[in-house]
Amino acid sequence: MHCRKIREWLVKEPESLSGHQREELSNHLKTCDKCNLAFQHLANLKNEIRRAKETSVPQELIQDIWQNVRLNIEKEPILVKPKFRSLQFRRHPLAAWGIPSFAVLCILFIFLLIKPWNALSPENDLKPTSLDVAIESAQIDGKPAQISIFEIRNPDMTFIWLDKNETDNGG
Amino acid sequence: MPLIDEIGIIQECLAGNIEDFGILVKKYQALLMRTAYHFLGNWDDAKDATQTTFIKAYRSLFSFRQDRRFSSWLCRILVNDCLDRLKSAHRKYKSPMDNPIRDKDPSDPLSRLAEEDLIRQALSKLPKKRRRAFILVDLEGFSGPEAAEVLGCSESTVRVTVMKARQQLRKIYIELNES
Image 1 (cartoon, each protein chain N blue to C red):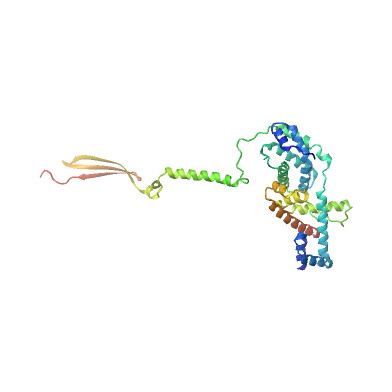
Image 2 (cartoon, chains in turn yellow, red; image 1 turned 90 degrees about the horizontal axis):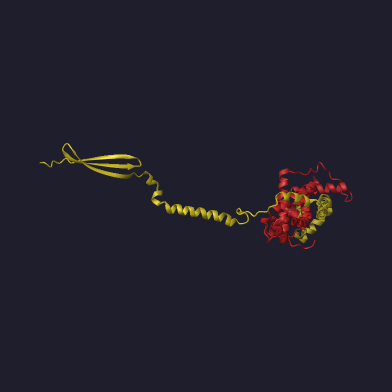
């Protein structure tokens, strides 16, 4: 358990350790071979990183880089600035999401403005709409009568209403 | 390295003068090669990645924002290319069991190779973001603002990422040595 705590301190930046922790660490390293070995490994790592930093590029490898690059870019030498640049969602997230959202809102607003509210009501779909009313006068059995023809849509139906005058006008 | 007018050269390249691009290639080829080597682990792949980076950079030179550093822009292309290569090839470094560590003698070249290999293994086990930050800052010596420009994040994010990368690398390195 103690070694585990020491390992945690070992991997931390030395500056982040308190004086007490440093003291405890150095005392532990004197007595624990395993942790001392880990400390040695870290010293090796530090040296290796320093060496890696000083890595120099073999000169024979970089001699022909420009020649190779040139051969490739000569095949496609034209640098054309594109007329339309795609929206860069990462660079301008506000514009990239805001503009399409605003456009959608505008379309929705125009749609709602054009389509009247009552036309959107679901009840309206079930309400029959009367189209034409034709009223004809006729004589049935020598008596005056009135025929009314109603045409209804939704559902499509035609009603014929016969209004017979039963009163005897002749006396 | 003498100071050169990079913006002027880029303008010339945009006007169609290919030869001017050679000045930029010669200026940055060593930096890119070394960075690619740290990512890929061998010089042949590093050279290939460097050449691809210059070709990609030339073809998209119009998109370079001239208020930015050209070196950072190039490095960004290179880092992405290296990570793509690693991803597509599923490169795995040899396990330490295949390559037993000998007693560490700095003068022994085989011991040195084993040590280098172990560091590469440890590096390859780091998460992508931490590896990028660690290589740029600790191995390539990029400053905080430069690394932030390459990685596309803030300077403080770079600082924290590098610190976490160092800690994780130490932990992995000890584990690899003990395994």
